[in-house]
Image (cartoon, each protein chain N blue to C red):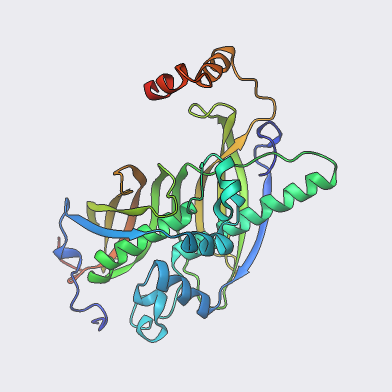
Length: 159
Length: 185
């Protein structure tokens, strides 16, 4: 059964451990920070400049969940929409290393750290990805290890 | 929770409330942060193994975070109502693990629950403690949507800065020595 949406994309067998994907970059504006914070993270230090200056963050900074969301968006554009992705399983060791302040540009790389076939679902492989997201000063802002399912081309074969 | 670090009770359970996900908001979130076809396009999503539109895991987690923030604010209000000074919660250094289990579909209602599983003083930031929280999200059928091990900062009420640090802080305020010390650290 072929999926018409993903049939021409790279499948599990086409991926290699050690492959490094360039995420491109995105500049984080004040509007983006406040719009996200209003809906998902309305702490004063994500909404208000004065409150932010007085906080541990030292200035208006994006919600960590927004930084993660933007990192995910860069991954979707640079990799997940080019492979037969079947969704995320979860992640481990998410670390917010430095706050992302208004006007910062974030970008970086994702490395394919591991590829293994699912034992319970032979139609899938599990792709493990290591994020290294940095700001324009090359300071780390986010690292995490994401596990994502990718369709196999031939469920029976060994990769 | 918005209590002083000292007042946080291990194993206390907080019901954070629930949220019903509409197709519109699933698509709106996905278009900004996770534009994969099964989060974005109901017709195309039929071809995926989900068999229809599902919310981005990052979306369900972001809503869970909002629920936690609302609960913190409510606790702050409650403490003020009792004439007590609430504590201060700070930003989070990270998440140890997050497992997505059952996908969220349009119309699903997800309930969120938080348990404080541990706490310790921060090694890196004097006057603050670290809280270890377990968050679970469950749908209207009682199925586990996701489970997360979260970490958060919480301020100490009774913190006394050690003399050594107080002297250092006073020195950094001197016009000549301050910049040298800051450069050295």
